Image 1 (cartoon, protein in one colour):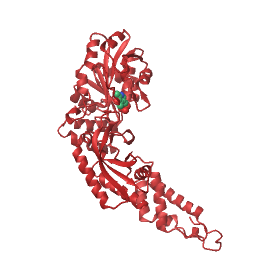
Image 2 (cartoon, helix red, strand yellow):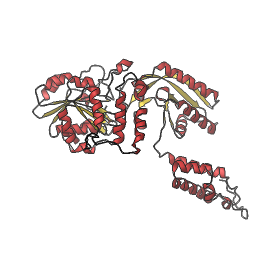
Image 3 (cartoon, helix red, strand yellow):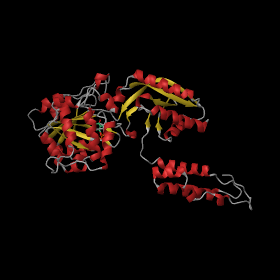
Image 4 (cartoon, helix red, strand yellow):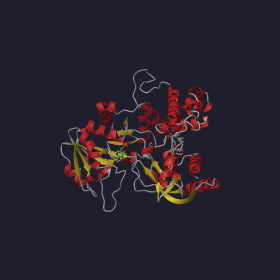
Length: 470
Ligand SMILES: *Cc1c(COP(=O)(O)O)cnc(C)c1O
């Protein structure tokens, strides 16, 4: 704002400011009110006018309505940063925890729109009596995996705490030193075991654990032989761990359980698509695990959830534990998970209908084509950026399929005006936000995690940033 200094006697521009009631008549304001609510927009109008009243000096030119509207819009935009909303994931991380992990299948999203009514969450439509929560999910999971029964909770960390609390409190849980994992900082398996009231008995060495290590640690206090899929890291080289089948054979006639924490919960064998072999839920159950647990929003590609499958009597014990009520899922999760699981009944179309599996298996040739097309679009816009196309690496993320870079193509943008940090920030502040990654001091867009139509948004965002910085 210009300061006209001692320009007394001139017209006071504050008197010429548009009034609140005049602004409320503007079509832009009406549209914002429809989208964002009257109180929010009114507050932005008042704050914008108050800032002008504070800063304008006699002799300054009064702001035009267009300038005032732009001020209001930018205030609203800043507020909007607090809103949970769709973003473009150009990071190449398919299950990005910061971006909500799995992209929900369209079928699940469509089903959620029916929740503007009541639903049969816990009522038996046949008898009219109280029914089983999650009955549909569990029956689908039984069909897909051959499990006897199942329980659904908030996430896999909750599943672990729950089965340990219900089945191993005050008793011993034997676990290999190579499997004492930490997931995302706040979840560490040793803490979880302690919290459940079970006693952790570590066996083996970091890189190698043998069957005899478990055997020697077995006592009449042993409740569980716990195997954990080290899903977010790999021990390579001189290694050995004991498969579920051997643990099952070892416990044979003892009152001891074998539990397999599978983590990412593959329901199909991904090696079919050239991806690394992850143990599937079906294989683990068939190998003799009494229980398995895994997440709903990793390789299943559904909502955040923790799934426990296995022996009926154990699931019943788990469901009766008080924590079960505290960790249960709501109808949004139950419905989205059910619809996601239904997709697995039709394996022929699964890669089209399940975004997580689709992105994971997109052929690299398609991604190259996509990158070249996007570069052509951007070059035609004559923007103040330098665009290049190159090979790159995507990641599964979310603690799944670690150490397995997935080949991809990226489009990179560099600018002589902006650092990569500045450029990526401006892209994040675009509506809708575009989340790119920074590598080699370039802003990179990974073609693997773009959804259909995202190219248009990327072009628009770069045009807008380019215009303000040309
Ligand atoms: C991811 C993971 C967890 C945590 O699962 P959430 O659903 O994120 O709570 C626990 N154990 C293993 C082996 C995992 O891979």
